Image (cartoon, rainbow, N blue to C red; front, side, top):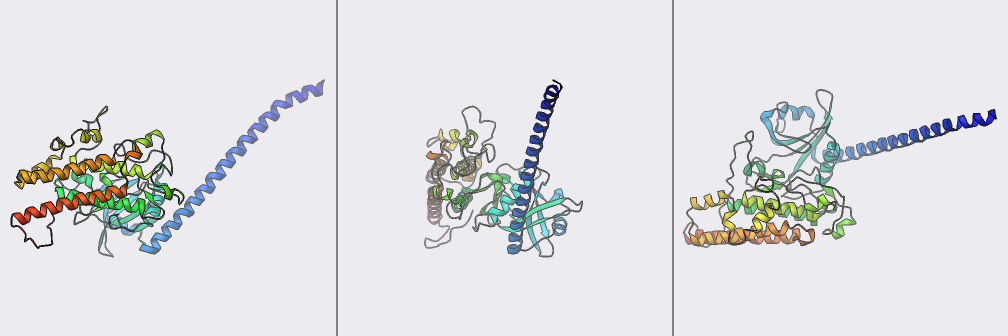
Length: 398
C-alpha cells in the first residue's frame, strides 16, 4: 500500500521533470539553430565584403568619418529604410562619393546590407548606381559599423525634384518634358536589365522617386537594393508568374496590391511600382497625396482623364514650361500626343492584376518609341523655326 502511494507521488514528479527536459531540449535546439544561422550569416556576409573589397579596394571608417566631417548634418543627403546617406570627400583620392551608413541596431539591417552587397556585385549597367566599395569596421565608440560607398549623384533624387524638403539643396520641380522622357527610358532600361539580362534575375522591390538618382547630365540611375531579391535559377525560367519569396516588400503607394494579399514577390510587382512612378513623373502627384482616398487612386485619376482631359492631370510645371516657350496649337497637339502615350503606358504598367500588366521588355521598347517620336517632333519644330539646320544631327538637351 505504501509502495503504491509512493509510486503515485512520484508520477507527477516524473511528468514535470520530463516536461522540463523537453522544454530545455527545445530551447537548446532553437538556440543552437539560431547560433548556427548567425555564424553562417556572418560567414556569408564576410564573403561578400571580401569580394567587393577585392574588386573595388578598401576604405576605412576613419576616411569616411573625416570625409563627412563626422557624419555631420551638413553633409546629409537622404534617409533610407536602414540607414542615412552622406556626401563624403575622400581626401586621399580627391573624390566625392555618397556613403550609405547602416543603422546596425535596427532589426533587418544586416540582412539588408548583405542583400545590397550581393545584388550590387552581380550588376553592370549604366542606368544602375555604381558601387565603389564597402566598409565593415568598428567606429570610434567601439560599435559595429557598416557602410556602402557609391558614386555621387550631384542632382539628387527624383523625389528632391518633385517633392523638395526644406533641409535638402534648393531644387524646384523644373524638369522639362524631354528630361522626364529620358529619365523614364533610363529607369525602364535598368529594370529590363535586372529582370531579363541578369543571371539570375533580380527583383528590385522598391522602385520609387527617392531611389532614382540623377547624374550631372540628368541621366538616371536606379539605386538602393536593400530589399531586393535575387531569384533562384529555377524561378528565372518563368519570370512573369508569381515566384520567389512571399511577403509585402516595398513602400506604401508604390507596392503592388497583390503583395498585400499574400502573393509572392515577382517581376510584375516591380512593373506595378514603375507604372505608379511613371504617372507621378508626368502628373506631379504622389500616390499618397491626400486627394486620393476611397476608390480614387493615382491609377484611376490618370485613367479617367484619358485622352480628352489629359491637360487636367498633367504636372502644371509642364504647362508653365510650354507657355514660357510660347508654343502654338500645333506644338501643343504634338506634346499632348506624347503625354497621352506616356500616361497610357503608366496605366498599362499599374493594372491591379499582375497578368494584365505589360511586360517590362515591352514597356521599355514602347518608352523608347515615345521618347524618340517626341524628339523627332521637337527637332522638326526647331528646323521649321530656323533654330538648327535641317541636316544637323545633334538635338540640344533641355
